Length: 454
Image (cartoon, rainbow, N blue to C red; front, top):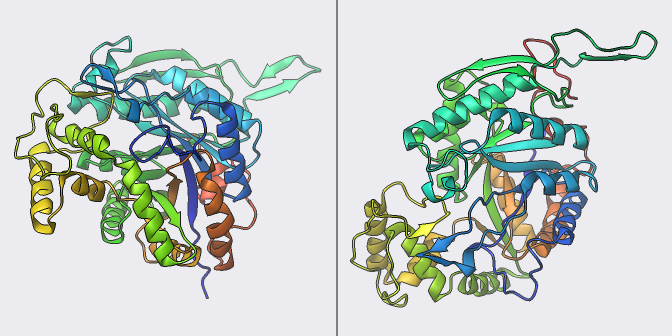
């Protein structure tokens, strides 16, 4: 009998957005280190694979005003993860860092350093941006044309890997008798030529335990899916409902195969939240209460504005979805946030049709549309569903969030993880020494030499 397919579990720290209820008395600070420490220690206590930090490079504004319900006041990712490396031993440390606004040399150096400091637990969630207001914060000013963002991302990743490979695993000799520290005079030599970068020099950071930190991506468009299939070790997606999750899984795994890679080399990990109750009815009641606070009348208007790209202050959230047409080409009304749709007109019409068909108000439509990533039930039924998704080929695991931070992960670790362990589909102890080991990924090779991990 073959072994049961293992579930991958991560946890993300969402900051403040429409999925969180920062005003809930159970919510703590989204900035204090104590919050990150609690979250990390809980994840490691539950034997989770990795921690996941999102990124916020601009305070989000609505019109010209700061949007209090959606402020992304996130501390620097590398600083937080390096601090967490010092208080944890096993859990992976994944940081979202934008390839549009950063240079390969500094990215390679920071992630190699994090991998060295953590003993091989670093991961990079590679994201792109064509958000002009965010781009104003950086040296380039403005932004890349949308057609160039994956070109730059691809070159950024290729150049970064070239830098990581510039040190062999045997580069440091450190022979105290002879006084010879490095193997030869070519350690760290690199050059990279492309449309976005023309760089050459000496890389300063020795090869890290994983060789290449784990690479995650979250592409949604066809170009994004192809990029992720060709370049990533894991893909963070938003498709959690079973049928759409399996459709995404099947599509991306086919793209991985087309890219000449083994589909098992790329893990598909949707985001998910878990809401538990002692009974199914308790869980549903709790879910309804949380949703009413996540999507209050004002937030429902703001979320609609991310599609319409115009001020909808005069629209009644308890009325029908507005007949106004979106203005996708107008200056951005909500700044500092990735677009929620590729086709605003089609999305607006789909919302109107949903409202007409089911007799829903705008707020009810928004609540339903954005309630994508939730398992609701008893610990037993939720564990069974997670197992089913993995066993039936819809996902390889989940990245878990919560409406409250940092304590929202506690009940999942205490009540759901043990049931997954009882099913034999989740580890009871860490067995690998690196994040690649724990995810079941092959060690990174350097120009054909054996990998150094595991």
